[in-house]
Amino acid sequence: MKKLMLVLAFIFIMSGCSAISLGLYGKELDEKIQAFESAVNQYSFTMSGMAEVSFNTLKFTEEETITGEYQRDPYYVRYEDKTGNFIQTKIDGELHTYQVSLSSHEKHFYVEIDQTDDVVGEIEIKTKSLVITKKNNKHYVLKGELENFFSDKDLDRIYDTLVQLYPTKKGDYRIHPTMDIRFSDTEMRYELTFEFTFENKTLHYRFESLLTQTTIDVLDVKDTNRFFPLPSFDFPVMIDALSPIYHNGYISKNGYYKVYLEPGNYYIESSKPLGNSRIKLVSMSLPHNYYPTFLTSSDITDYIGFIQTIPTAGYYYLYVDFEFSDLTIEIKTLDEDRLNLETPELIINSPSTYTFERTTTFDFMTIQLDFPIGSEITLSSPYSIYVIYPSSNPLYYDFHKVDFQGTTLTQTKSSMIVYLYASDMPFDYPFDIVVTTP
Image (tube, rainbow, N blue to C red; front, side, top):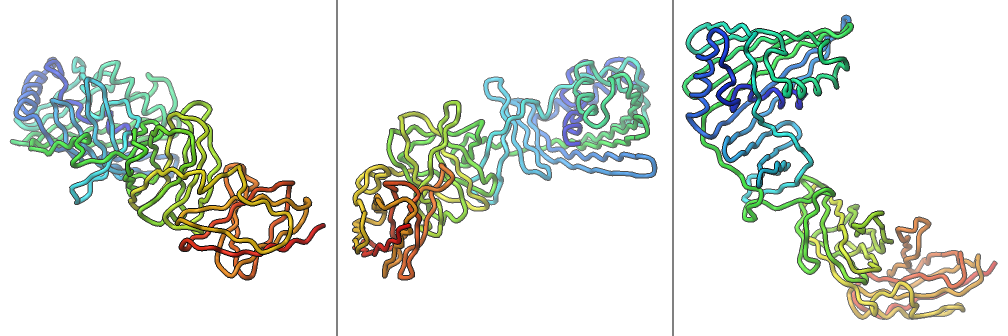
């Protein structure tokens, strides 16, 4: 119903000088509208709509309210409904629509959405066959066929919305609206009502709008002192791989960023625990390539993870799924001397005690296990370390905690690669290998 409300909104305002020029009281009403329009450039508005569908003995009612602000020139609309706050502007004649988070703080957030229709457009009204009744100097009533109210172009917009409710031919609706228009010194109020029957269903519709002359604060989403972008898949924001990214999950938990990367290993460092969030790099070229993600679980580490190996230089999406919070994340390179996914530092083919030498806070050890396929390999250590290995899902890795109780892996192929990681301080971590062969 919101789409129908927006189509019907501002029917008379900004309609051009020929909006109402025919019929008894038509010129008089047109002059009042033009005088109201030319008095100021900015307005606040409240729109409410009620649709009641009757089907046999059943009735279904839907209501919607939209409030907002409007500037005629340059075009600007900010409106709010139950789904959020929105701003619509035109840049070099091109329409842009944004969903915004208007908090009590100085910093607001926005994400551009794909909406191509003006929320407030110029709608031409045909009044040749309308009956206009003047109740008093500030109250007029218009009646007639729907086709006599609007131009063919605007009728198409209305019918395109109605056909989603009741599919039928354009001429089969037989709608007879009544419009009630009232004026005060700074306000214009109108109410549009109509009903129509399709098969055994009847739609009763009432639309009310209050337009008030006022002064508004025009919000510029491109003002970096007040707004911060939350990019989407269709509108990714270009970022510098070397600079921190501020992501706000309150308005949109999903964010897409565009970043240029050279080949290598990359990981994410976060200002808050990553928890169950998802962060990944995706190629921008088609088809979109996804790369195996290493170290994704907060059970291993809270603030760092999501390691991925980028094979070629180019532009990539950085996808962030972090709900109901805000955080700062950084993309950092992981040198091969800290993690080499392919070349083992240690080849183990016999049970013994070995040492994992961890020299920095983010070190890994690549191990190649060379035992007969089907062997049960038990790793244990007096310290808490983790063994990470490829998952059945090629895009992820599994992990087990290794402590004094030990954890057991099965040799699924010859020369099986696994990785060791410790989340504590740098240290030489001893670990034992015990093998049971098939």
